[in-house]
Length: 485
Ligand code: HEM
Image 1 (cartoon, rainbow, N blue to C red):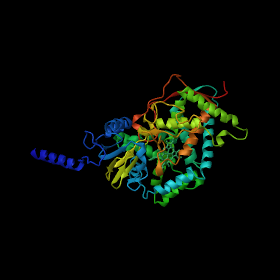
Image 2: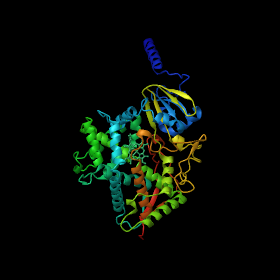
Image 3: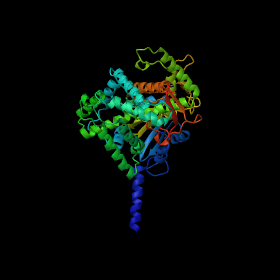
Image 4: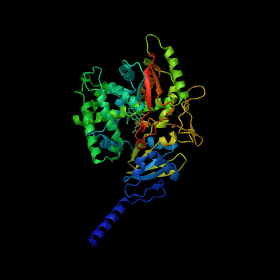
């Protein structure tokens, strides 16, 4: 018996020595939480926004917290973000990305080639292929809506989140994952149904908190998605888009076998489809619940429709839509909440914009959470909880870019797309897709709330840190194609 106590005592001492950390003068404020090893993991995972606000009130713009055995330094001063974003020597993007790839997608690439992948993405999503990609997307969007309203003459009830997410997911899937030949027999709806189950488990997979039963479900859903996404072969005429063919070729050159390629393709499905549908939902939802904003956007769209000629649809041309752009920026300010995380691979002195200096320790992680500041910072955005469709418009109608904190002009006044080399390469494509979807929804349909007094649903607080937020529940709407009785 006495030996059991001695052993337990030694184990506790050993644990204390291994995990003990005290704050030195150069470190940011340290908050380990009361639970050994876990630290603040539970509170962080439950509602990161609330937790980080509490820490900010206690410690200020920079602090280090213990989260499941790791020390994470959180920086919440947008004036100081560039010191993290621009230092890829001391602060590494890839290591933490690889941890997430493994946890979420069960993916370990033999040769992770982030620079080559990034160049390939830019070629397809920004370069010469951009116009062709937009045309394909536009065609699929119109065909999907045509199919949706076939024979519909009367009002139809629906849920706005499900409607926006499923429709845009299918459009995105057909545009980016299928070739022109379309001889792939997979039904986009079945990919979406499986994807939704996967998406529902995503945050738990990322945190490694799946229960045994959920683990089995996740494994099953992943397997089905790998099979649904696997094209018959690699050539374009086998049913893959040019982008996907190029991506798989790069993976092959990096030594990835068939199995690994399938897992990587699922990761791309998430990166390219996980945010657009939710963003379109929030925007349409905010417009429907804010009549003044809806009227302003409709006015802008009707001016575009008037310019439409018989030969060309307005969707085929770039659209100059400052009111819509401001409403979208405002939506993303309120609902895009990614973490920007880096691993400290060599000790670094972080120079804050206010002149203070802090030491970042090797092996720790650094995390920026722009949702907290700048996006929801009352010093930058007046009444930050409120949707104001014209927040990003100047008096002359141009896009407003001048916002201030502590009297200084900000470089980052909203960061839905991330920043720097790892910022979103699909930004312009995403904006075009959302704009076209909202345009068609508002000009070809009568669309209204089932309950005229309905409010926007609350956000699912467990998703802070994972890109676009999603609602708890949905927003009931009804719609009918225009010009029918
Ligand atoms: C509203 C829609 C979207 C939002 C809010 C969004 C946001 C983001 C953010 C914040 C990142 C940076 C992630 C990080 O730092 O770890 C990112 C990366 C990325 N996004 Fe998007 N995205 C959207 C749509 C899209 C679309 C439509 C595509 C492709 C067609 C796309 C492709 C990518 C890719 C490939 C990356 C990885 C870049 C890299 O690591 O080099 N995104 N996105």
